[in-house]
Length: 89
Image (cartoon, rainbow, N blue to C red):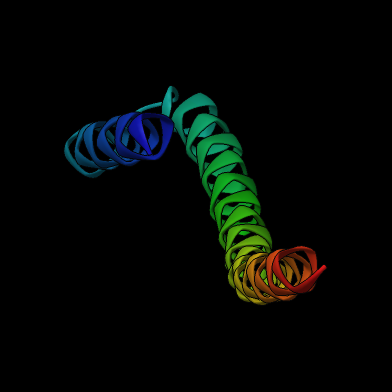
């Protein structure tokens, strides 16, 4: 997220310079702005991808927690039955 903020800030400054300065250096600034915009778009796409991965992992984690809870309960029931069987013998 910090990288995105830095890129946006640099892009804003460069755009301000570009708007105020219309000399031969505009070509370089324009190219730099284009590069920064491309990097920003890449970073945004990567962020979106990572968020989707995190969402899928969170869902999988919840499913696994549910399964673990039921397995623990099944073990407790089995232990209780075993204790009852031992007590009758």
